[in-house]
Amino acid sequence: MINTLNTTNSTSWKNITPEGETNFTAFELPSGMRAVVYFDDNPVSYAGFIIGAGSSSDPHRFHGLAHFVEHMLFKGTPKRNARQIINRMEEVGADFNAYTTKEETFVYTAFSQEYFVRVLDIMTDVVRNSMAPQHELEKEKSVIIEEINSYKDSPAELIFDDYENLLFHGEALGHNILGSESSVARISSRAVQQFIAKHYTPQNMLFCYRGKNIDTSLLLHYLNFHFPPNQSDNTVESYPHWSNTIIAPSPIRNQVNRHFNTFQVHRIIGCHSYSLQEPKRIGLTLLNNLFGGRGMNSHLNINLREDKGLVYSVESNFYPFKQAGFLSVYFGTTKNKLADATQAVFEEMDKLKQKPICPDELRKAKRQFMGQLIVQDDNRENAFLEMGKSFFYFNRYDKIETIRKRIENIDEIQLQHIAQSLFVPEKTLQLTYY
Image (cartoon, rainbow, N blue to C red; front, side, top):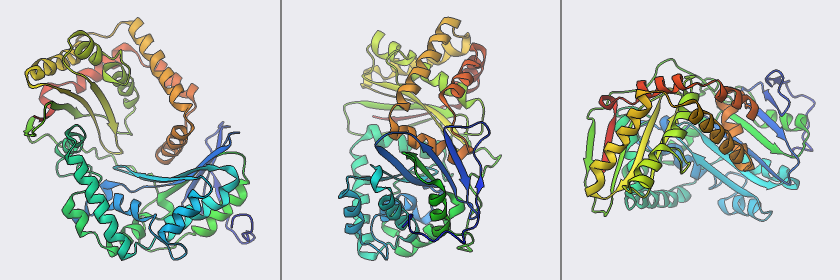
């Protein structure tokens, strides 16, 4: 346990807190694992491990393996079986959770501060010692295959996975996170263990904590003890590892249609955009919020829904990855309105390309964006997850004022140039379910 661990022989760690930062402290252990700690005075605390492996790390024959491994973490270690893992967390009201994306897995817990030692012990056990017992593996295959089948009944959700597969055809980013029924059926206990051995290594992980004050030195000694350096020869280089190669394969076709027996037609119109490495992503984030973001006053919502009554919902989204990114517009409508709705989307794109938005609209767009960000940050779980991901990829977690300055530095000409470079009909891919 953390408070009884002998720490006299521990190797020192390196403080990697950005200069001038006062909200959090960050460290790198000799093993390459990083840890970031943020103190606040709330009764609920959050802690977790981010692992630099998502569905883009799946072996070719085992699409869905990263997500499958995430499920298997809860299914038993030499110290605890699946029921004991669940009960040890649930009986103190802790919310033990995990999710998998294209590029990372996040295992985390929300808990009452007094149970921090218990929570840390269990989370460490599952990310270090998961066994993937065969009887649990076979049950979980069935569960995940049912999850895959549930998407087939929901074209409004299925279309997003299908779209990414078409846009990134032939690339690891393309296949969906869950995998297919056949690829999941092929997953073996050996495949799970090999994936964990390769990717769940200290230098590929970050531990993050947000909550009441704890003894940071004891925490680091604990992590150093349980995640020692050179524990495996089968390792990956320290995260984050960037590449200058940008993944943006040209669409094989600009329009793809698939038949579904549904009342609505579902369409996505999108294109490749900026990666996490590209500074212009900040401007695109603001532009997307104005164009078709979550506000009911977005250009797309006002035009397609409020003014013309063509759709019930319409949204645009920007998804940046390490070496790629894409922007997409989704809407659902009836067949007789499809052409008009599509034309209206391109009209809104053209407006942003043809002339800069007026200074007053830009000022309001910035104010709205920052307001949304502040409201989002008030959700402490969201703030914890964002802190972890930000430090995982960039070794920093920006204050609201830092973000505000970046947003304020964006002008209308920059947004126009971004629209002109991305909103090119010849470069778009349209996927339609009808």
